[in-house]
Image (cartoon, rainbow, N blue to C red; front, top):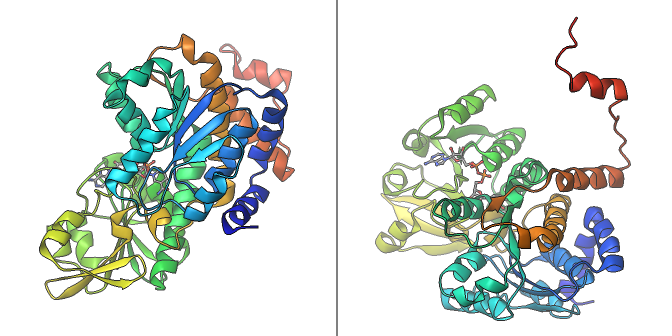
Length: 408
Ligand code: NAI
């Protein structure tokens, strides 16, 4: 077997939920006659989603959603799957990146699956002539949902999109456990440095941030959280972490990971006060959280190690991982979220794609929640695969929970 196929077969064995869904899709062919256009991180777990959709009768056209997250051997293996065409290439230029997005759109997809909203953005700007043919879409990540909600608020979103990111079965597992484990392991394997005893700065105590903080704390780090939301800052404080501004944290931190989904979190004024050997990385969707533009414009960097660029600021070494892009995916050793986590997220994508294809024509252009039934189904399938049984409400309990006049 070639390396891409081997990676897919490795992933498949830890994706029992998608495996169950695939069996039903193979029998029912819910996507027959449809073209699904995708822009996701092209690696082995995504490839298992792609083959699941293809098994359900779809023609699938896929490219990457980040220039550094594609694994070329997996892209090659996907092109051997019947009904699939993959255009992604690692380390492509911006021009090549958008060219590949256009190739996916050229096939006139009926359903889109995005991670970061690049397909949908292109459809609503440069490729508006294709909008009529789209029944609906699904979005994978927080940043994509922010952009979609902003579009919908201005009345500019022209087809229904399901906010896969926002459903409990995604956020509570993918963002928390997935980002927590994978960003941390990527920092460790890329730098070969110790976490225990270090000042570990997490910018943003959202779903991703809290996962990272917990894992770093578990390895013995002294965790500092920076926030702009007082409630989340207080939560971090009561969860046992140090809370302070980035200006304060910049002087203390040994390792920094940004997870805000916002821009300009670590900038010149922070670089200037950092300790010698500070390690900087980003786990938020776009590469705008660390001000690489300033570093590149003002300092000459050199490649200190694979996926690490070092800049000298005020005589001190500042080490930036993966060009400030998603550290869990964009370092050469980053493998993205653990497989079991993506089994849940991609099971949601598979079932939501089926749902939007069936129901999308009756929905207006807006952002929609994942139907509760789908969220519960994914949890139940996962529990089933683990052999875990849970209780069911009795009739008496059901009545009790739904009544207002039962007291003591
Ligand atoms: P979230 O909305 O739950 O958390 C973001 C947090 O950052 C919020 O608590 C917010 O108050 C805080 N924040 C915003 N501006 C800030 C600032 N200037 N300083 C400090 N804190 C600030 O979002 P979530 O789900 O944690 O996602 C965060 C980012 O990670 C998004 O860009 C998302 O797309 C991305 N993501 C990345 C993954 C990966 O594989 N690396 C996986 C899932 C999401």
